[in-house]
Length: 122
Image 1 (spheres, one colour):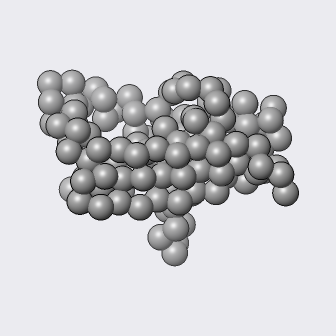
Image 2: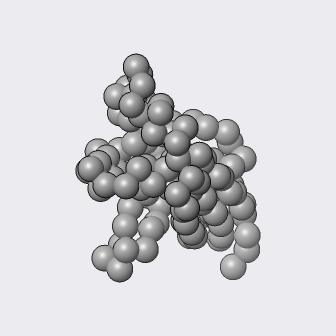
């Protein structure tokens, strides 16, 4: 196993909550999160959205591409509750080109912040 990339991100939960409830909140939600992510987080703690957002940012940092498309990085939950990443679109093509075999994801949050760490391995 070789490390291909490492990314981390810290999201401010109050800022994200403000963005989601603001004038362009619905557009931001639809452009950034998949239907699955919205269904899993809506009506629950805002931290679910914040951890998913941090995971997307951390993933793009690990790939060193910068933000491409929010929905192309999808945070899903395994039956155990453990989070994982599914790639779509352009970033999926980049992952294949870089021969990424596994994407390791760790998420955590407090009342004010959510953090994500992503490790790409071959």
